Structures are given as structure tokens and as C-alpha cells.
Length: 81
Picture 1 (tube, one colour):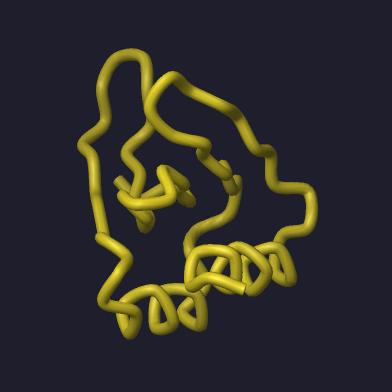
Picture 2 (cartoon, one colour):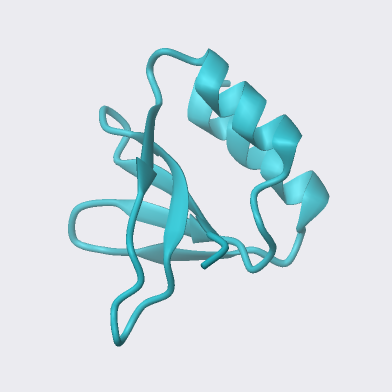
């Protein structure tokens, strides 16, 4: 199992109802609850994953997550305002 698959499996233990969407550049897993500390620690410990954060826009919530640029897979969590 690759690092992102392991991180997704860990994340889904906390929130099994997460939704996965395919975009033109990446497959993204969307979670509704804030990022669990266990997911944050595991993602931060893996050098092949890139952490990201975005600001709120009129159309999107502020979020954070991890991206595997090579596999083109991401996980995204809502971020507190």
C-alpha cells in the first residue's frame, strides 16, 4: 500500500462516509469533520505527501489536507475560520 492509500485508510476510520471526487488533475477525498490529529501526524511524517491549506472564498470553505503529487490523490478537511 502506498503512503497516500494508508493515510486515506486511516482517515476513513474516523469518518467512513467521506466522499471521493475525480477532478481533471487529482482524485480528492473530502471529509466533513476537522482533520484528526492522528491523520495530521501521519501525513506530516510522510515526505512524499505535501500539506496544503486554502483560504475561504465566497464559494468554498477554508480547507487543509495532503496531496500525493505523483499519484494525483488528495485528502481535504474543513479548516476552522
